[in-house]
Image (cartoon, rainbow, N blue to C red; front, side):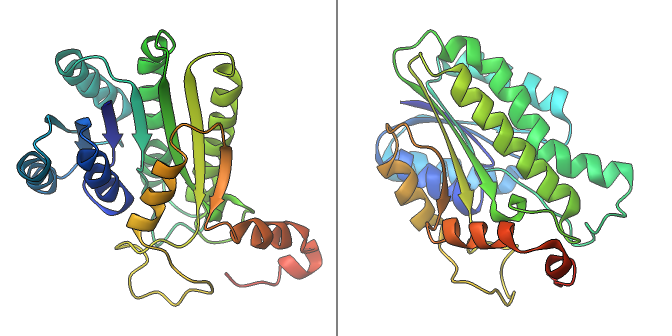
Length: 244
């Protein structure tokens, strides 16, 4: 495997790099923090003896990011798998963010993924076996007064991956999308959450188990299927009074 991981240096991205490295995959890693990225790359090379290249890029600047990754990929070689464990939110995302901060959330969670998939898709479509894997959020189940722009971006990402799956249905490309519940990351640290939290490693174990399956979109953990259904069925007169 020759794999691109965008959002590689922390959380699910870091756990994914560890697991793919253990399987012998060559890795092209993208993140914004050069120190974290360099440390991760050195660790993967040392422990797993795999080929690792890195790209330090800011996903908020979509055009520059796609250009940087494209140039690195031209040297790295033909990629057969794209993973996008990337995302960013803002504590003040309650409908009043300025255009700059709102655009940063949209670009990091949605637009950069579209840009990179568009760049690599023609190449992936020529291969007998390839995959594109995206990661969404239960925040996109139903809009609410917090995480307003973030939720919209993740819902857009979900729709985009549905379209990708339809587009690639008769090809060798597998398109998968994981709508994640609460994951133990820096963003969730210290928060009082309503439902159990899972580790990045648990998420990655599920992703690798489903690697070659035509699963489309699934919730993880799976009990979020029922929670999502319940949230969607709450009548508006009740829903509008909820504070979450």
